[in-house]
Length: 128
Image (tube, rainbow, N blue to C red; front, side):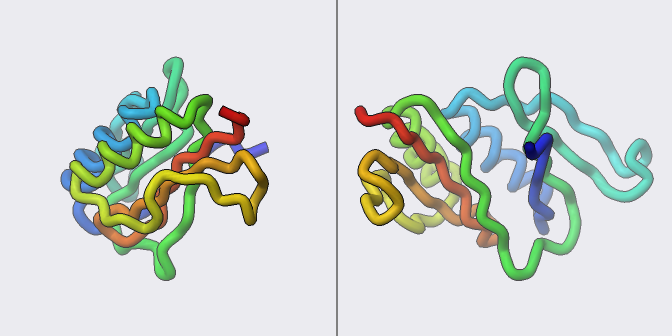
């Protein structure tokens, strides 16, 4: 079971703004932020739900190749909201909301590229 994951980004403030908007649309919030003076390495920001950060953004040289991270949500409307918020916050389209039957009949997802090219997805597995 995965406890937490994250990405390394080139422009920490721009990426925090992007992720705050995109993930805010699916119920995530910025929960913790620590400067390099505390971590001993770099600035980090943690997003999550219910007081637990499980997705982290760190200042540095972005992952190469970019990573793919999918956030599971409970409704297709949340997938749609994620996509709109991510695009409005400067994300680039990488596959708008829709069913991807090649994964399974109810796989409803949307894909965006964050400011550093990471492929960020929201997915709902519910039938409707």
